[in-house]
Amino acid sequence: MSLEQLSLETVTRLYLIKHHLFNKAKKKDLIKVVDDVCGLHTQVPTTPYLSLWNRVEDFEDNLLDEALYKAKSLVKTWVMRGTLHILPSADLPIYNRALRRMWFEHHGRFMKAPDWPSIEERKSIIYPKIMEALAQEPLKRNDLSQKVRLLLKDNSKPYERLFSGWGGILKETAYEGLTVHAQPYERESCFARLDKWLPRANLDKIGEEEARERLLLKYLHGYGPATQQDFCLWSGLMADDAKKAIENVHSAIEEVKVEGAKGTFLLLKQDFRLLDKVNLDEKAPPRLLPKFDSLLLGHKDRSRIILDEHKKQVFKPKVGDIAATLLVNGRIVGTWRHIKTKKTLTIKIAPFKKMPKGDLGEIEQEARKISQYMGTDELKLTMAS
Image (tube, rainbow, N blue to C red):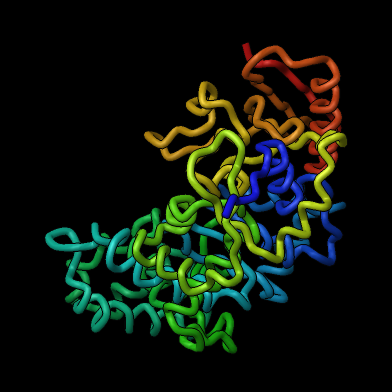
């Protein structure tokens, strides 16, 4: 049986539609947008706000803050690949149960002797003290660390290194389902007990195998057509776990070919209807995507959105960085960075090659919209030398 073949242009346009980068969503659909892109990367504090600004009409920062810290319909915690994301709170059991073992058996293996106490010691001694320290209210990392040391009394010295800024034991307790991020205080991260922050959350209401299957279906809805390798790279799951999940949901998936790409790709059967919305004659709007935007994180082969010769200017694994990018008609054509003062927003763009005047004009219009969104009176748009 011959598989349906999709053109690269069709696939690229399909991603834009799925990620709300072709047509922005309404403000009332903010939670759905977060769900559709499988979470907002938030290692860089500004990323989730700019990611949503690019996807939601008339977005304002308070919309995300209210969903995170008042309605709590969104939650911030560590999930895919050991990185910090914002997710719909209702889906936390899926992400946590699908990825918990991944962390403890693979990505968190650096947490071992001699630098770290044993996992048994951490669970029996440190976890209870963290929960006790957070019993009354969320705490900043340093305040939590100090309170735990006081609770440990003379036994605190072996555990002083556990509260590092890159996550430390608080990343571990997040995967264990004990803690989540709370509202920051004076721009510092704060942490809360999950059972107090989201008292109705029950992470164990879903089994690990079912959670991986549902995570796969979510991923394919946001990033399909995609390969098993893509899913592993995005999620951090091991190949055997990903393969089993694919086998278990095969009835919901169709295999397709992508023009110019090797191998077969997986697409949800229900998403074939989205292909009818693809109109290659209509130019996609320009977007100024932030660092670590989700569009750039879903696939191993990124040639569908960026030429191989330009990848090193965007993806910088040695320093753990993914640049903010210029998206023109579905392709990454350059990078950008900004400096904001009280009255002025300075945006410096660095196209990979000379841009047509029309594209440059559209980028300038989008930059002016960002300046207005950030509340500055003046925009300075410059070209990197």
